[in-house]
Image: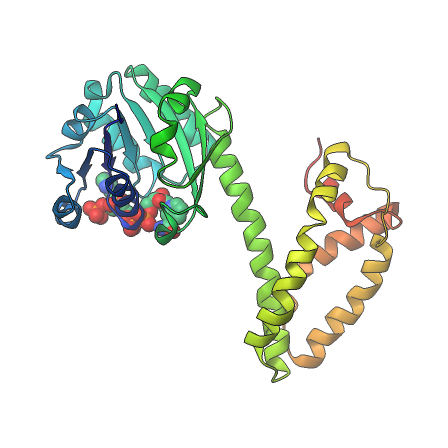
Length: 288
Ligand code: NDP
């Protein structure tokens, strides 16, 4: 039989999650602090719970998606013993430590815990391009894999509840690095009066795609702590920084976004690693 699911928290994301469950044919119970947000889902066939405890009693799987962990703690306290025997799937954004602490509390109540990191915006939920990272109870993930795959691709990262949020935050970190690069290049192109949209679609996006193919090799270097150059050594790259910074000055574009990275690259060269690859900069960020 298909698992019954409750969704607690019907903001933009919780609503998308409940919507996907209804579309997939799951019996779906919903609860939100502001009850009116449940109305459209109830019209689509969702069952309305009058309290969090009622939502917990109604289902095998209780999906929670609210603003922060403090809110989740309050909801778990309110449901209390009604969570016994259930699986709590917490898709609220938070830190690894917060996830582990909540996992302990949920287990103490006799329920299983899965933490999830949603790598998607609400409009992507239920589509193949959505990715959700999970960690925590292995039996719970295996028993309810089918439900979890309703939201998008479901990737399980092991029984440490903190692993999904760690990978989630690491992926966001990579994304912000990419956005920083985009903002800097858009500012340069705009300062020259050129067409930023055309530059972006015709040139920058394909270039960034090509550059992402270097990441697996850089990752292997990082894993080994060995950075022998494969063609573009750090001293050469640092020499070109003057040109990049000079262009910023000439165009009246601040280079403050790139400055921290450039400083680290210069420090790495000053430390005697100019003949190595860029990946060695990771040694200045973290000592194993
Ligand atoms: P919204 O602001 O749209 O919704 C917030 C939800 O949290 C509402 O249902 C709100 O209830 C509820 N809530 C807040 N505080 C409490 C509380 N103390 N008790 C009970 N319910 C509470 O946020 P989203 O739905 O966009 O985001 C929810 C989670 O999903 C966040 O942790 C976010 O980081 C994560 N996420 C969101 C993504 C996105 O693109 N939207 C992407 C990936 C993750 P009420 O309606 O009563 O205010």
